[in-house]
Length: 191
Image (cartoon, rainbow, N blue to C red):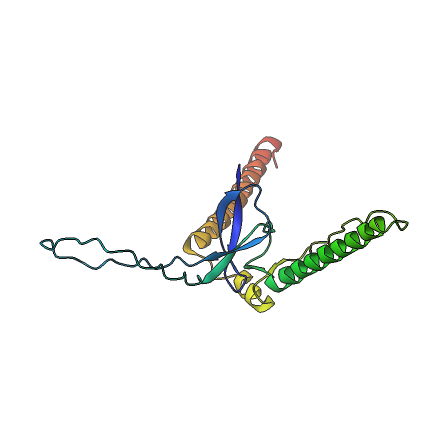
């Protein structure tokens, strides 16, 4: 199975969703595609001579251009931004908790080897993942600008005018029915 996974730029701003395996979690960088090297053009009449391959050049580090984020994107954000600083701080806390657990487990096993009385076996307790890793990327002013009512389109104006005309017709129709009823009442009632 697969799921849509958000991609973000280096600034943390949402770019688009891509399809990944359901098991994908965490935050993983993605890289710029290296420029393919073009082979030199050879004239057709020249013979191709086998050359011993040169030692391959060490691969240049590729440039990180964004991240795949395995944390679901919440609804309601105008321009979502993933908080990479908070994510990195969380990852540091996870590594510290793992290190502390490894140290406690080592000490606990050492007590067993030395024949000392052991307490209960240490249990790894990971830190809680922050809830607010996705935040709004726009300022309140930018959101207000986006959400302020704009000028009506021609279609919206025509719809409003149409509704007003319908109401006017209904009112005139009611007035006409009332006038007819009064005339009918006068004719039958003799008033």
